[in-house]
Length: 332
Length: 126
Ligand SMILES: Cc1cc2nc3c(=O)[nH]c(=O)nc-3n(C[C@H](O)[C@H](O)[C@H](O)COP(=O)(O)OP(=O)(O)OC[C@H]3O[C@@H](n4cnc5c(N)ncnc54)[C@H](O)[C@@H]3O)c2cc1C
Ligand code: HEM
Ligand code: FES
Image (tube, rainbow over all chains, first blue to last red; front, side, top):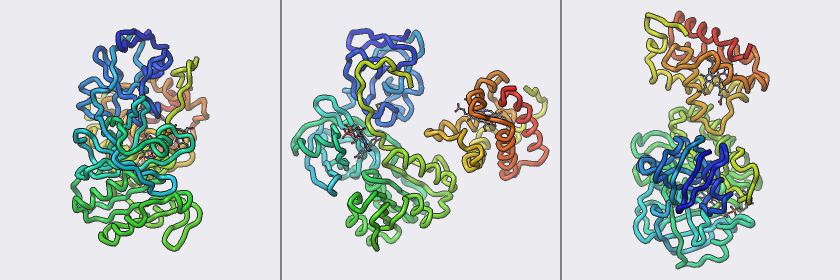
């Protein structure tokens, strides 16, 4: 049996169980959301013992070297003894600077950290509320701007999004952890065509990446496809149209499944992309937002000729509800 | 396992970098083929690509160690899902097309296909 020590207590792991599931099952509260290795909310540090490589996938080398790992992806083999701590040391205190609505369902959250956060536009961070509730959000701001900007979609019954929309006030304090993720613009090859596509608040990282690429002097064509079910789901349309006017190489294409207009295309996002960018061989692409859509677009673009190394994706996986004392913990 | 005194096809093709280039061409063909693509759907495309690389490295005689038993065990779940000769032939066809597309000489292509063919009984669990 593997065992994990946390705050001076040892906790046994069932066979195949993750460190996250084992600690939650035994009443230890550990931040978590996606439980699929995608959001980094469950970041922890091994101070003694070795964690499986699979639990460090996607972490920066500096974090790996210090023993950080994702508790939801950490299934130590039988006999492992691990001593772990939380990732509190990596968190930065922050306060909410402003809250405003970008559309009827998307809230713009501006945050200021007490000390500067080094990040690339398009990366994401975890927002940690005072009570430990943790969710990941992508950065729409540019590093030189004075506030961090997040776009949060209000979900019915959403713990974090509901709190931000209804209860949070400018001045409220939180913590941020991160940044993480590889969805960002790397300067170089300024002529290379870029393709950015996302649905809903998947626009947040893309809005950062587009502005970053333009600021870096990217001269090749830049295509931004933003999809939503209906026109009400689109936002920042005026800002993006203005950006396209200023930069002839930038093409903004909003699309909806129903209720298209003269300015808003109607149809599935992949069909809109195929119509405008039929042969994206040698392009660079970023895909963000709804999980299944991002994965299916990624496959289509790969089949259309984009190389895997040029395909960057952030699937906004939802949080998995916490089940108390499950007998099948770790079964997946 | 063939213990060739001469250079393996893997080395003649250019080793690991050549495999990396071949993987995308091969994986694209496999994913686009509706007869077999369902075996290769994976949310983690990088992980799938790494396995394709292991496959290509193996059939070109490169440095990966899989025993016939590994091949049996690895593909047994697929056999349960209906893996048969027609799927094997399709994969072999894409392998051939990939090598030809990359400009590999015909005798080398034949060698690779022979290695692949020798794995048929294990892959199909016979
Ligand atoms: C890498 C990453 C980046 C992300 N970036 C952003 C971002 O920039 N903007 C943003 O708004 N969100 C983003 N998310 C999603 C975000 O982390 C939260 O999952 C989301 O805000 C819901 O949290 P909540 O606490 O409000 O709702 P929860 O309390 O977690 O969920 C409430 C209910 O809604 C359901 N639900 C959750 N997600 C969805 C969904 N997508 N569609 C339908 N039902 C759902 C849940 O199952 C639950 O029943 C990102 C996620 C990841 C992994
Ligand atoms: C020429 C014969 C074949 C050889 C030599 C071969 C070899 C391999 C190798 C080396 C791996 C990687 C194992 C690992 O690293 O985990 C693998 C995995 C796999 N093979 Fe094959 N293979 C062959 C035929 C096929 C065929 C015909 C199919 C289906 C049409 C197939 C489907 C798969 C799949 C889906 C995996 C991944 C399984 C997983 O996700 O764990 N293979 N194969
Ligand atoms: S990465 Fe572990 S909960 Fe999301």
